[in-house]
Length: 227
Image (cartoon, rainbow, N blue to C red; front, side):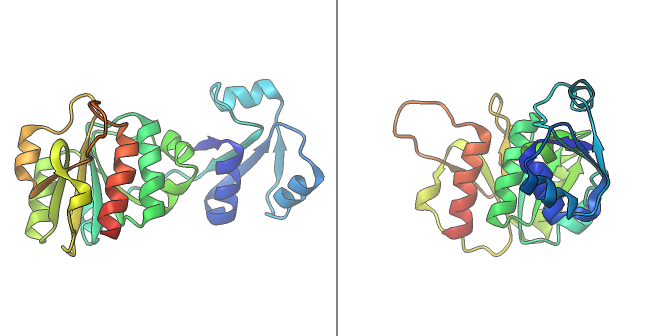
């Protein structure tokens, strides 16, 4: 799996070195940066700009590219042993999922459950600046069945909804929690909301329909973690 960009390049080398297969440079570095890369102990493969662009499929690689091991998803049976989970339903944009994964990792979420047939981890690792590599992520097909299992395990389930209770007026004393978010366009289905214990929302100061889903998640997650 190829990832690129200076920030994710150095994050992976510093925190997940064991995942690196090959290292590529497509630019001349200053002496300090080059020495830092050399110290990681990998053979440095030099690429010309055209080849690097091909590897990155036109993305902004900044001259720094890594080939890393494929991401290994966590089985749902394992992830449901956690204390605080986030479930994404109908969110397919890798930029949003990557931003959510980055925030989830930074704020101490135990795992991410994504409802869908497949997940493009290459883009998610890159857009999360590598944080997704430190987060347990499960890929499931049936949200309702998963919610039933979690409820049997005494998880308290919160649905993110524009009409939900103001998150800043709530307290979260329940030990095991799940926060569910839907797509910006369609939100969560009525069936999923019906399965949840409570709906949470963010009070707006101006008449605007919603926030970007990753921005909304950051606010909701911080409140749930610290209320």
